[in-house]
Length: 360
Ligand SMILES: Nc1ncnc2c1ncn2[C@@H]1O[C@H](COP(=O)(O)OP(=O)(O)O)[C@@H](O)[C@H]1O
Ligand SMILES: [Mg+2]
Image 1 (cartoon, rainbow, N blue to C red):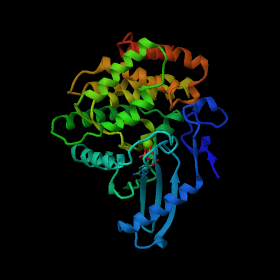
Image 2 (image 1 turned 90 degrees about the vertical axis):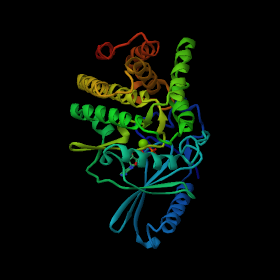
Image 3 (image 1 turned 90 degrees about the horizontal axis):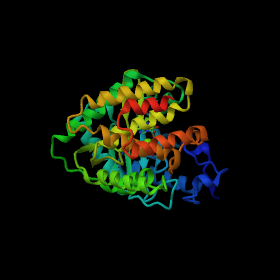
Image 4 (image 1 turned 60 degrees about the vertical axis):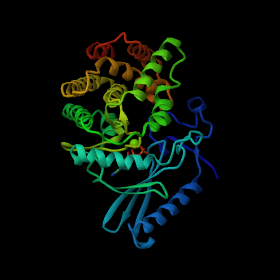
């Protein structure tokens, strides 16, 4: 039996309702096969035993699939006194079986986490247990339930200016510290296989804009400055009091820091439309993040390039594969699309001007 994905099966923001075929015309194979999940669970149990994480199946109290991203199968596993996260990769995306993505991406994620933990405060990263390279499973210690997903907080209008400043400082530190040493880490194929096709392509038919975006893609592929987290967005950030943990590094690569710098502002701006009466707070947070990063980054002043990338990332939330349902209202999408195009063309070259236009 084949079950179509529904809103509750995946990120609630992504437009993937079976009620509207237009929204996933790129792959009519938007489906999961329940049988597969139990097969993957069996594989997981076998791997847990083989890697000495458990002695016997009976030690497992619970295995639960975390219905989250579109690419991997992520499970939470409770074993008597321990909770483990297992991230399981196939050579394709979970919700987009027509797109091939190499399963060894999780080995790169493991290596990236180890590197980040070496250079930056390790409390901001997950704690890796091991990588099973036979089954392509990455095991991590599960962090406490006190950590709340930043995307949920922003959705509920909980916008922290301190967190925005801390995240700006954190991203600048990640980039500064990893730019000063020789690091043998590449993983550029994930930029080619995920980031570019999912975010930078299929978002416009306008020739002039496409041409500009080609230049921006080239920057991502050719600039080699530091370690880049690759998916620095609120659903990968978990917050508890003054602490935060950033997860999800399969798209981490040695490359262009502009990607991380521009990613979070696109989310702050997009999510601000969920709470129009509080939009000023989201805008202030964007500003705080922006300046906190720029005041510290020593690699390059990438302000102008970042605004162009921000235009692309935001446009992908309106018109791309990972577009958001709540931006589809014409009163929002029409002016926002225009702003994105202005950004990509380099016509808006200042963050204050951009935020002034969003506020209107
Ligand atoms: N170490 C961890 N502890 C607790 N929860 C985690 C941990 N790592 C991941 N998760 C949960 O699993 C979800 C998916 O993990 P993530 O690495 O982002 O995978 P994906 O690439 O599928 O988005 C996260 O959004 C979070 O809810
Ligand atoms: Mg994720």
